[in-house]
Image: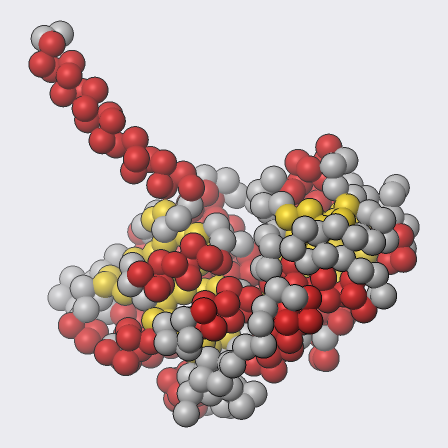
Length: 367
């Protein structure tokens, strides 16, 4: 091979490596296109937009996004405007993408939504709809933890410092009368911040005694011999609490309300289809997970995980407010001003047009 050709090949490989690194880390990694979700030839663009960039996590608690992507429902509502998807591993990276303008709309948990809103002084995002409730459990090693009181003195994993499940666990610990330093995780219970992807390995190795985690991680731990000691839903009124919201860049909402309304119509239609066709929806979500990550969930994990999640258009605003108060009490958040974090105007218009009832913003709507 001539030296110049060899050099060109080396340079080409070096140029590609950073791109591969970005994709591997999950920050804005592009989901694979689904054959049913192509832009229809000759379809009209909404608000003149070439595309709308939608972000979500590869978690079953983001099932609305998974199913809506797989079934092409977002693309259907967006017409000639392409639905582009990005899959994230954690809330902070999705908020960063939203704030930088590289993402328009995202499915995300309550804690990163609150953090993103407060850190920007209420200027960068709005919660515009609900997506899911529930799907969070405390799973333990039954040989080490026989009852709730046995959690004292044990090592319990949560996904990330200050994330939604971390806050919920710290609040539950405090209600038991136990003390834990929120930042270090040390105290009457040791809180181990562990990525959901590696928590099952840590559990199997015995380096943690249990975990307060969302689905499907909770059911993965059960498949490893764990036992569900507590379902977080039982701690909330009507056993409902927000686990996934829909958020939008404020600038995008102001400039492209028709596109936002189209995404909300698709979300409402997707949740309706999920609830009417749970088995088909479960399969569709798993197929999209496989497309995004290269690996589907086995039935022993998928079935119980899906069963514990409720898909709802209601953002359950009062529970987000309560979760923010829990974060303040834990010392992870200064008293936030959440006035204006919600703008449910378009969602309620969509729900009304579909024959549904309006949902509430718990007094935290945009004025």
